[in-house]
Image (tube, rainbow, N blue to C red):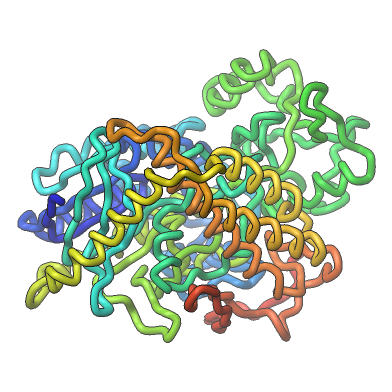
Length: 578
């Protein structure tokens, strides 16, 4: 088994991972930085981010304080306000950083970076590169990383286990998908940036690879996951595929209309209309459908409403929303300048994730940091989004905490004393993981990971969607526990070592089961409606009992739940009105 040594190991090659790598590299050219991607790095899901990145570039009617307040209010007051203030303070410099490395921002008169409105924002503060912002940011990051001699990228390597020895993170165990070769990536510091887990749902905007691998690995090591009950449903997923129709469309003036042709958001958020926060718009759409005001897609039977761009200038669509037009033309043969787009809420973003402090350091259940470990981007939960993320704050989060974690990991590695780990203990852990893989390959079970994954997604779509009930969540828990038992009886048809995607898919299914269960057991006790967690039996927010973060962590063969307070610095909880 090959051992590959580096100073810093980064799991994940999206915007958060690459940003952390570049800033760690800048800290010292001496540091060796290894990045692992289960895909080619430029296939990471960050390329799919469309709308933009938030930050106050031109103070006037807007300010960093207003950005912070909008974020806290949008979070339904579950965000840690010190983290929110950190986001608002640093986001503008991150946009400028990306400008310097070559992101082609849309610009207006005088060369100013253009910014458009997004949901829940008091002012337009979302910088954008047409509606392909994530792709352009990733391209700039990737090109910059390739120019750094001390950054090595391991494409198509799948990590299956975090290596934690004597309370210290020392890397990860992975296999090379191309060859099947097993490897130990040993490092002084480890940053988890493996993205979210929206593929626990079937109707989702996210790529098939968005399976929360790092988050699931952390859970299996006893690391707490925070606020997993809060999964964001984006209001406008294309029907029937679930492909994202960016919030930028509504930012540029698109309307939501029901089967009667009514612009119904006036009944739910009169002052913000279509630019209310995502949780409010998603609930409004499902409420309209439940009232009988929806339409039905003929082949799938999927009920939906319509996103209307017909009144927009064609130049706005062609210049600022070209991806929207391209997607609807390719997927539905529909020209959005002539026909409205069928949409409904779709699983999009994981507000929860690995429990961290304000600097992205991974925390254990006792509140103490795990030495040498950070979690950032959608994999980590600071918590800066609370119960509901405002659109375009995610790319700011990836950039701000990518920088913070990269610099902190570099400092940790530069001042590291002693050996990384006892080699015998490390090899024992790695050998046990290797044996587990061999056991999976040799299993003569009867279940396929694909059938289990399909049924998991159907269950989550049914019972953990926009509106939840106690009965539905209990049914989801029972179903997922049953699927976990079935997974022990899986059969992997491909026994080879070269590009065994069957084996990779089995690990992804295992990770999805782990995270779906964490979502459900975190949601069941929260007897209130807050942000993305909307309980039919408990329609009101309950600050007296539930103004707190949920922690779920593995304990023996079971799990434990605990709670920690929300950090409030300036803004006391109040009713959300838009």
